Length: 128
Image 1: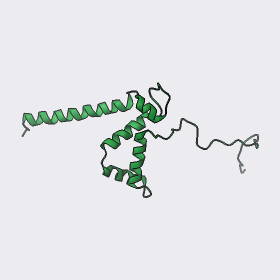
Image 2: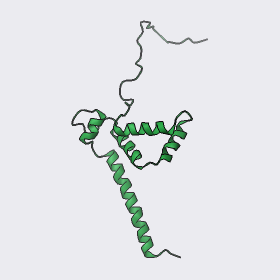
Image 3: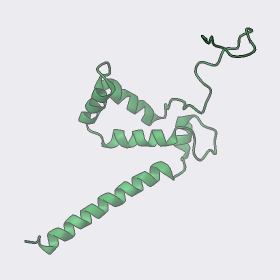
Image 4: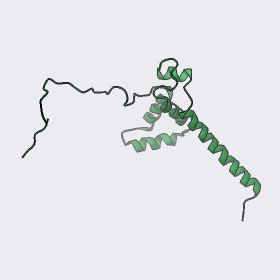
């Protein structure tokens, strides 16, 4: 038995609209340059098209707009028992507002310490 033509048409139209929306959302996250508000929120120089953290901020904005409260509960459960859903929601809201932490391409948090004890040869003891 086959579904009536009108129901198939509605089903395939809805599926096409959902796919098109998903493609547009991904294109906005990945390919569209930042506008002036996003550049200001990220603290980048004026005229920067793709500032550091733009894609993270846009992804967080999508999560804030779409995700129900249960999503924050699941994320907190996956992170571990020390994380509450409220803290996850606050963190994602902060990311959506533009407070993106620096990535690894910037200076390391704990720089290498230089010592005056530079020795020649290997820096370990080998037992014969």
